[in-house]
Length: 94
Length: 392
Image (tube, rainbow over all chains, first blue to last red; front, side, top):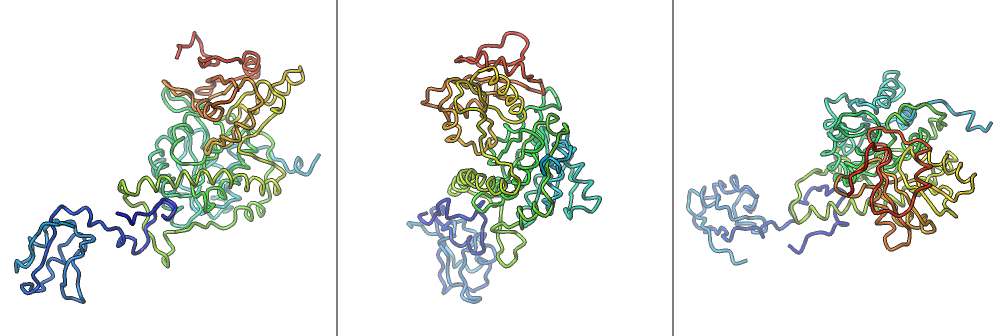
């Protein structure tokens, strides 16, 4: 978490500006497992995108292309809702 | 008679602060009545009913709501003033901390009154001390004139970009809020020009630069956001000095964070807050006429506390009596503790006096006795207490 800002760099009272929420790399809290996808099995139903509580599903337009590990917490919801079983959890060595 | 004396009106401290509020003409005033603050909001409500202010008064259901509404209004972009006393401030306290942390520049008039229990409506400073660590600036008036003047200065101090903190303008309940004395008001237009437009860095209603405020902060950011208040308080001392100079040219009335009265060659001094300072000045004048070298250090800014100025002012004094109109059972009285820090390592002998709790009077004779008897003693003295005080 080296990008944490010092007190004088923060807006008064810690006001949050648009885009600020993208900066913190909250993926460092991840559980120890991370999702991986086999895109050849993906049917692009976007259920994972709908269910992901952390907006960690990356799209190119409307096409699922992978995960944003900077924000993914490893909750396994995407794996649980994937009807094509294209997502599996693997050990996270990051 | 000078022009100022001709312009003086006979007003209570409460009425004088209501006049200041009318002249400041804030946008929003969320407030709940409580003795002895009520004359302030009652006076201001009359001005509003008479169309003499454009302020929207919000009649809230409690002080907790008053301070909550004040935060919303102040952060939205509206100049906001409220007023309270004692239990009202106690009920607000939770939200006062939030106001300071959100850097909401709310101005608050406080009629100092003892906290319950037993329930009591008269003056002491226990309500102020309850929010000592909340991050609000606390200025103490000695009389109605000072309450008016500090109220006019308060919005500029609160809203200064380096400060952005709530400012409490404290006046002793009844002794100042309800006592009529000559008060010189500035012309309306001069107050208006002095306070200027309300500007804050991130008003919530500025839709071109939207912000979210009042978010959760984890251990990785809470500490830094709290530290901003430390910096804001440090800045508040300098900003108060600047504003007091500017106000001085406007009014011919000069203010400093601490006021030295007859201290130059004093061997004994009293340090206190609020209206007692006025009585002490009279006693100092009398004792000086009798050849005694006594003086007063009146603390006008309790938060931020000007430690360096206190130390400099009291350096030549041998004995200092610190008069606290509040107590901290199980620990040193609050003003005494500040003085002990300000004077650590110096040769000044400090002694703690607790007085005036729940409105108990301290007469000139009592102050005379303090000056006459002051010598070093580890034990605090409880002025006017019936019975031998319990050793602490």
